Image (cartoon, rainbow, N blue to C red):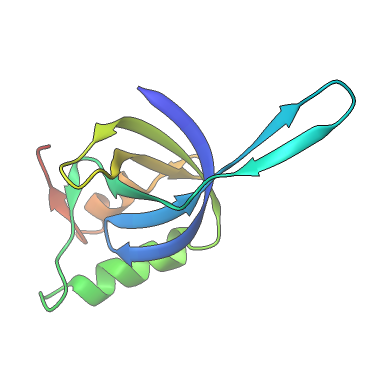
Length: 111
């Protein structure tokens, strides 16, 4: 399992976000900040309704309000079949995967 910190720049739907992260690299007497390309993260263990399914708007709206524009920490457990990072996403220490389940906005999804 790997971890990284990132900023959520786009909410694709209730269980997928797009993020970028920065990394500071120090040289002899200066520091360079490198910004990643956008990366998509699929929330591990949860499945929210797809577009045009009942509950889609509520789940997507919740995810947007909870994490859009915020700094997050991501625990990555691998990649899914679409090449997205598969992970747990934390906002201020709160696991959004668990929040979606506890509010009945998602169902358990076995990877």
